[in-house]
Image 1 (cartoon, one colour):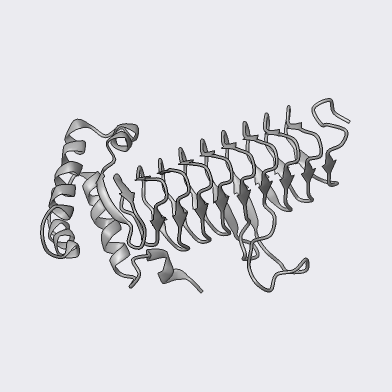
Image 2 (tube, helix red, strand yellow):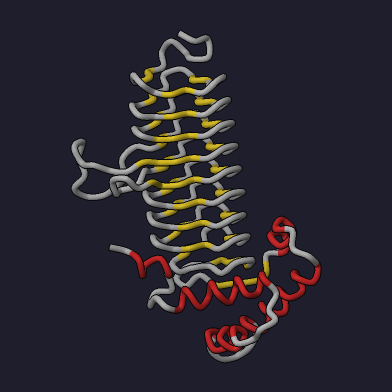
Length: 269
């Protein structure tokens, strides 16, 4: 057995391990798993069937990755989908990530993400890149988190919610409808947009002109009287919007097409 694989680890036949993969004590890797180069599985990690993990990932003790989703009626004979994880992710202790509930589909985690202790990601979620999810945050199934999202501790996310790029959610937020890009949200039922995420704008690499346009659009949409959607539609009629503002407008219009403000609900079975 390789010196990088602890003798107490249990690895199913046919598992594909890249070069310099390290597997710690009492870790279990089930059949059909593929793990890329230089990935580290610490002690007591479980990697479920048909999970694909890229290169340079670090998975800390007691994380449960790719085991069956929490849905009624499922048993050992139920056909489910898989889980695909990209490169350079850090997955801390006791994180749980579920595969797709649909055969031939995947829950998808991108690259360069940090999932802190006790984070849960439900089945059929899609996470893009450079996302930070803090301790004990729970993301329900079928959600999408776009580039650069940052969720603070103990945030709860309703199923089918889209959280758009470079947003920040304050601790204890209860997010039950879509969040447009570049904003800070807090509170629950209802969650409210509070401010522009200045740090997110900087991390996104927006120019000074683009950042000013986002601030101006924020003030126009959320700091005036009357229905927000009317002001969004007014902005949508303009031909010269900066790209980040156009993305805010498009996000809000898409969400408005579903009665609960969750665009992905339009595509549920």
